[in-house]
Length: 276
Image (cartoon, rainbow, N blue to C red):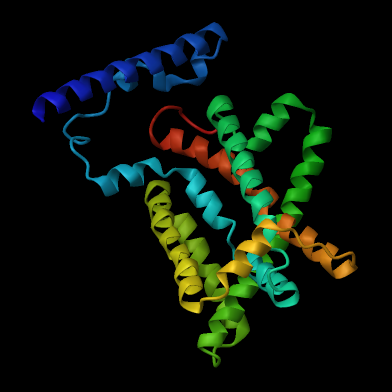
């Protein structure tokens, strides 16, 4: 086992050097050396073999889970839960088939945004600004700001309403300001590395949906049938819910979040100095 571990580390070190040198040559060829001070000799050394030796299976899996996990989990926000609940209450299983289209689309968009962040080492707004003029970027950012404000308001309102289901004596306004205060304090006071780990652990709460589905039961034949066979109604209610589900599942803030978080990970690991 020691022979295997030593040779594995040697191979990893060789690949580590090779990847970093290839990136350094690429950035030098394009005149980007000054922007990446992290490619100095201090960052060319591979990780300490003692600190990374023999991680358990949980640690290995946890390290593989990156910003995409948090972005995907954040898409399951209170406003999304409210929208899906309304769709189920109004149309039953009639819209379950949309998952066959929404899930691949969300994966592809997250992958695209992640690659933009890793290659450009910039947030999505900065990457768009570098390619297009301010006259094109500013309207997009303005629309995103408006959409985010509305989405945040809906999320906090839904959280306050849900907590009052458990504690009905708590005033709505008190619950709202409490959630706002806790969220702001966590984002400002907790360092990014610890905050990202905390968010990763919180994603485990999503297993509650699976447990609820198993406990609640249901006709699995009907669920499978509704998933594979599309149900379409030609009326305004169905069209509005159709658009709402697409809009809440593939929200614009996810694009910017995913791109920025990928770059933030590189900043924390010392690969780059700061977000461009």
